[in-house]
Length: 447
Image 1 (tube, helix red, strand yellow):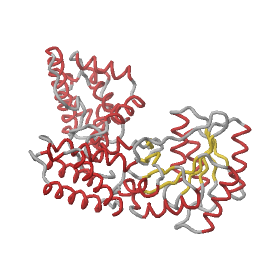
Image 2 (tube, rainbow, N blue to C red; image 1 turned 90 degrees about the vertical axis):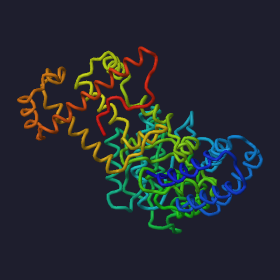
Image 3 (cartoon, one colour; image 1 turned 180 degrees about the vertical axis):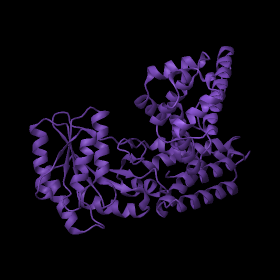
Image 4 (cartoon, helix red, strand yellow; image 1 turned 120 degrees about the horizontal axis):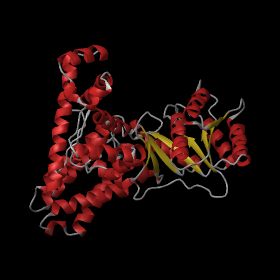
């Protein structure tokens, strides 16, 4: 995940500061030096780093942090607030027209993921904003680009406009279609290049003159580091960008592009790609991203994910059964499936303040174990799932053969169910006494 190493560095730096009873000029300078190294290693532009540190020091002196009894907490707040400013202060939303279709033009270099992102945007707008969306395939140069967009459109149930002509004509005719057929949004998937050239910019300018897009959004690969700033400046100079979409923030990117681009170009980041699935697109919230970078979690996004993906009635029903001491293997399987809807385990834990970090290997093991548990539970009879106490030796042998697993794997499922059941009993007892336990992941069946 992007910012992972930066988050770890920040947490260690701020932990040391929090441990100081008094903040002095010396330990303040030491902290700023460590932050400087951490940001430069995260590929943040050196000008941005210099101004960021100057702002922190100015605010610390202005708020008389040195005189406070608990300077660490004040300093953490200053660092957080300055990160928010760096990332854009407030969320920058797409401005939709009320009396005519909204036209979005996606631009960027080849390989940045424009076509997939066009699909992600269309899916988000259709499902969450209830917009009627048309995708226009304006990349007539890249082999299979049109086929890719048509495949995505079919998957998400969104119309795709194609024609065997020039990108400018395609964009113009697609605009006519959205007006005549009462679409809400037109998304233009434009061609990219391996590098910026005059031919590309000339074509994009001609499209801009023809369709007059409401938003011109640059797709920036978070893996590209400081090059992203140069790309953004070049596109902005020619096209007057209204926003950026940061792709691949779920990868091994160090995050420097996200921390540099807004400050140096003035172009706000409006969306963040956080995975390969077409549903893996999130509005970009500067404050929430600052929370993540400092290891403070992102509970609001987690709550939104839960509201969007979980069946509230099913969750309540399972919770009531669990707290009533009636927790069977059907409930454990249902709980597993609910968790899977929210995304990767590692991504979820990062959103919860204070939760432990897991390695990619642990994540892969957890996902493998969940799949194994599901296969084993599905190999049981309805009676066995509802009453796991029936699972004696002969039944375990039959289930192991039926699921292609070992008897030890079956025993692992039963043991995890027993542990979860005991935990539910403890939580129920604590709830009655008014002393709920702090933390814990319920009956989640992973290490």
